Length: 596
Image (cartoon, rainbow, N blue to C red; front, side, top):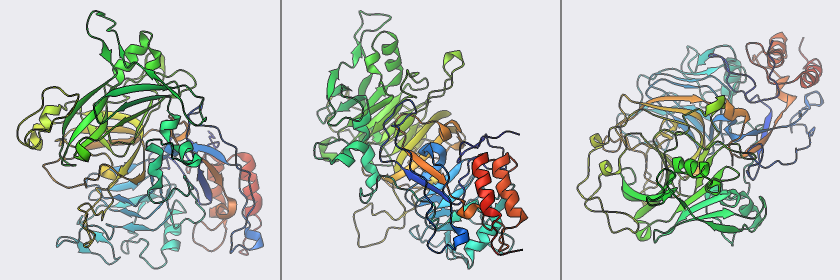
């Protein structure tokens, strides 16, 4: 018997058909306000004190106990969404890790959508499209009052801890619109699927206002309050590379201790001698380029971060060109009053710098959108060491394949004059067929924004816009012809905000991209280890529901006891709790609930 109960979210390696990551009813998750790295990838914080607060409607025999809290990274979830989470993949999609949505969740699939771990939704769980999606003639209104354009739909299944069961028990689809939904879902999926989770609480940067979580990636300002300054990742990063509206690229290394405000910096030279041919012009870890983004319908001026050059420079004595704590902050100003986007692009990143203590990996954060060009973090370092942990956090994240060239992006007529670029690209708009992608892989924890369904992208608030967000299947934004080519991703993804800068809405438009074969998987390392800058949270298991009625019988019976036992012994339902906690829960379970 293998017991890995120290981790309540992702306790053991997953087995297909069983939960890869689990969040039981009664977990309380409190995200911390800050995420500065240390030996664990984030700033250590005081452990919350266990309490014994009964639920408002609880009887004396139902008073919950709160087990010892455990600190876990946000990347412990394969999918973490603050806005509405919409999923409507046309190809088969399997989600192996735990899912949390702090709003409403809408699911459907053309071929199949399978959740192999626990799903928790603060709002409601629906089958179909959200009410903000396009109401066109081909969209059917189903009996459950949800919208769908996938007909006939494929199965959407959730785990009950032992097998995958669809949203159609044989009597028609069930979701939050269905009478008795709470009891139906609890009976069908044995508490592995829950919405309106009043006892699953997430506090992340409380009081920051609408879209407040965007603040963690925004530029620091002397006008920031202390609570705001303490959560901004620019203040936490040990290396900063910026490009102003004039095109001047500068580097700065933080000299003040972590956590000390205000932050102080010293300028760092971003160039270094060519180690092979010193007589050649000096090489640089940062540069500039530009191309046309067909989704944004704008020219983009990029601040290019060359990760390979950072590694080379460090290997030849320029260790100051690597972030000591693993976090690099980059920012690039817009041009021509916003007519041209300033963005950050990561290139030559197949091999990441292997960190020295206290860093746990290599992370890039920007207030701008981030383009990942080519393979990222795909090569295992020499000596049998695992790949470094990495977080990429930006306003939006685009994936450009290994075959991408700026010239093939095309664009309308000639780009306006922009500083710090070579000969301008001229010509007419190029079709997406000129941008043929090749197989490309990424391994990381990604934080990015979306353009939600119903967004007022044309500025006309007088009419409702029923555009689709693109769903989780389009969390990454594409600009190439990917048809028949693999886009591999291994890691975890979090959507914490609405994109503030890259607001071009998703369009099922062949002039922008064609979808790849999505070879996506969850990396269990991100369930227990934190890449630099990853937000951390406290998780506590409450026994109030653990000892409750899991099979819908109205009593806590033998089935419920076996369910609880599974979470301790490492049975088919994988363990969640240690021996002491199990015994405490057992004591509460044996008090009974008035049933015989």
